[in-house]
Length: 211
Image (tube, rainbow, N blue to C red):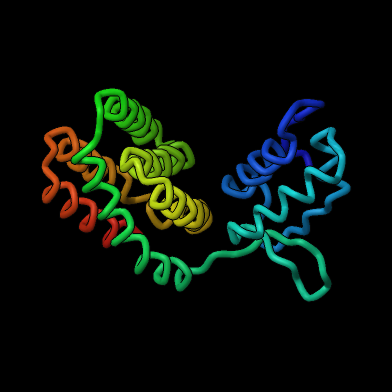
C-alpha cells in the first residue's frame, strides 16, 4: 500500500496503528472503497496483526471503515447528505464548546489557537489546501478541548474527523479558505475577549456556511 510510516516495536501499538491508519484515511491515501487487509497493514507497519485488528475496530467506531457484504473491511465514504445530518449535531455542540472556551480559556490555550491560525494563514498563502484543512480540524478540536468538558471534547473531535474527510474528498471549501480564516480570527478574538455571546454567534455563522 505504501502510505503508512513504520511503527516498529514500541508500546501502545494499537493506538499507534490507529493513528497511522486514521491519518492515511483522512488524507485520502486510503480512498473510499479501498480494502484494508490486516495482514498487509501489519506487514507495512512492521507489527503483528493483533494491534492492527484493534485499530480497525476503533476506526469502525469512528465510521472511517465498514464491513462490506463480502466481509472485507473497507474505507467508508462520506456524502453531502451525511455532512448535512452531521451539521445538525455539530452546530449546537460547537456553539456550547466555544461559549465554555470563552469563559475558561487560559493564555496557553489562546496561544495554541493563535499558532494554529498562523499556520492556517501560511496555508492560504501557499494554496496548500490539505494543510489548511488539517489546521481547520485542529482549530475546532482545540476549542472543544478548552471547554474542559471531556464528553464535549470527544463528541466534537469525532464529528470533525468526518467533516475533515469530507472536505478533503469534496474540495468543497477550497474557494472559501480566506473567508474561513477571517471567521476563525473573529472567533478567536471573541474567545480572547471572553465575549461569550459574540463567540457563539460567530461560531454558528461560521459552521452554517462553511460546507
